[in-house]
Image 1 (tube, rainbow, N blue to C red):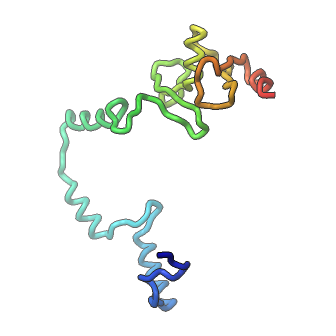
Image 2: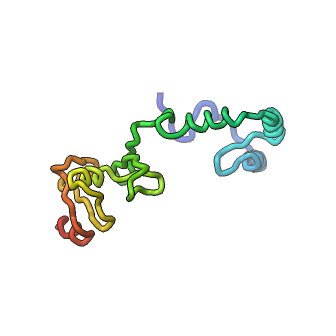
Image 3: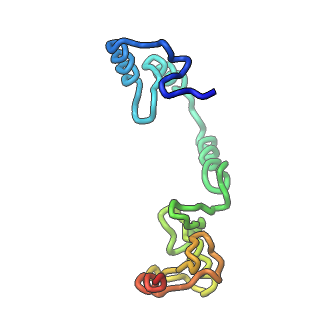
Length: 154
């Protein structure tokens, strides 16, 4: 059963005056913020009162916190994440060239294991076949600088 645009059965025949539509819109905007619709002020007050006075022990608070980070997090997948450009990061909090979240590019780690040393920040690892998540050692080439890496693309 297909509907034509503007011909939805539950709205058919419901035409509101311009004044009514403005009132409806204004009342919606009062309850709306950047995240969507908010509860009414009376509901927010009831919720706030219900949560007041709940005291958690330091031990309980610490236990809750530990359950949300790292390996204990429900969505943990071994410290492997993919960024928006398709590169894979590995969690390595003790690596000297980690980012602020403690992750390092997987292709750099693979090349470091082959070389037996940490890579310099100026060194670039090139994916020979252009596939950013193909981090097999036979697909990686170490370039001494970004300019050398750009030349390998041409």
